[in-house]
Image (cartoon, rainbow over all chains, first blue to last red; front, side, top):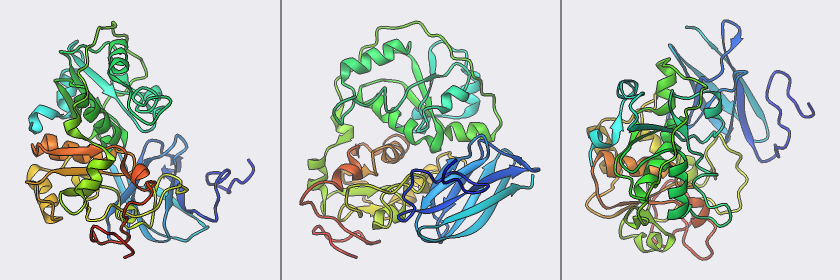
Length: 99
Length: 287
């Protein structure tokens, strides 16, 4: 697909000069996990947004530049990941659930 | 109102799932979620196509609401239990909407779809069939709905509670971070509004915090619950969540939801706007 990022979601239709994107994929034992919940927490740990993952385990946030925490919830599992986002860039985060 | 009148847990729903006088209603931001699966016997209401007027920016009217509930097979004396994704944002919105049109017994499923999924409870794809009814709605109860003039009068005198994320409040973002940010309106918040993000009222799994925690949350933010309170967000769905907390869980009577919210206020000509992390003065201004 035109505009696709290797391994990630397509940015087709987005004006990337105005967006600060955090996106990625949730997996367990190498298999994508759909329907997991990914929560975006700001630098103070305050909740900002939450999305469920797609059938292919993908998620995406339109954030602001800065440091963020991604908290992933799935039945029997919780995983936190730190990420730094920059304007006009895509921060790709792979979340592997251990449980 | 109290917690037991307005909120049920998942065990209660499982025990009443085949009760013909209990109607489960799924209302999601992602309106396609229902088609994949849902709680058994739940019907769907689409917050956009079912609850918004297709032409002007307003709710469906009393007659349209009656037609909708009749078609869904909901009777006036049914117990309606609403649940949805996104920590019950749109489910709370639908709850408030059912109250607006006078439905007597409506409740929320604590934690909504997320808690149900995290508990790995049963979800099915089968769509139930319910016999159509003749539903009678009341005229809108505007004692729980705020309009822009109410909001302007409240600046500096009554409680305004901005329930968006801190970055939206300060004007660093125009929409929740899972939505594209291009918008036509100005960023910021209504001057003198306290910032109490809706998410502080919920646990990670989407259930509501305890009454004591909730009361401390609003009082700690300087919200004097003896005054009138208007809650707002971007389009009125997250503030319906806060309206539910204040009006239904804590039993505060003089609380309204401003469904026009920031997408209306931030597009008005000539009204004061405050930027930054401070509540500000009635005149508004930069941080």
